[in-house]
Length: 160
Image 1 (cartoon, rainbow, N blue to C red):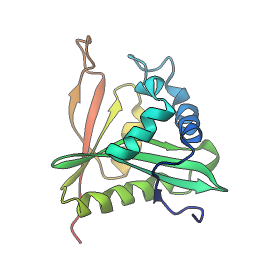
Image 2: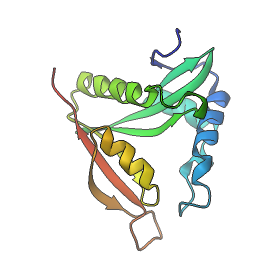
Image 3: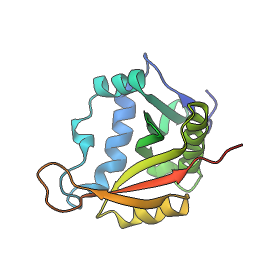
Image 4: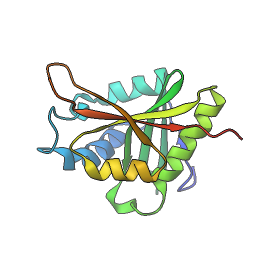
C-alpha cells in the first residue's frame, strides 16, 4: 500500500509491529494515568481479534505502521480506540486522516457519531480531540474507582 493512505488490515498482518507502535506511542502515559492503560493487556492475538470483530486501519511508511486506529460499532456511534501516530510522523495530518476514515466508515455503517474516550489526566488529548471536532459529553470511572477516570467525547458524522 502506498505511504500515507489508510487501509484496513486483516489477518495475516504484522500484528507485533502494530503492537510495538501502540506501546511506543502510549508509553508517555506511564505514571500519568490511573489505572494504567489497557494497552498493557494488548497482545498480537488480541489485535488480530479486533481486526476480525471490528476494524483496524493503518497508515504505513516504508512498509511499517506509522499510525493506526481501532474502530468498533457501538450504535448509534462508531467507537474509536487505540489511535496512535509514530512520533517520527507527527504533524503530517495522519491522525486527522484516520479520523476522516472513521467518519467515512461510520457513514457507511449508518452510524451518526464518532465516539472516543480519553483519560482525565491527558489534557493535551482533550485539546487535540476538541480541535478535531469532538466535544466532551460525559465521564466514566474504571471499575473500582470512585472518581471519573475517562472523558467520553463525541463528534457528529456529517452527511454528504
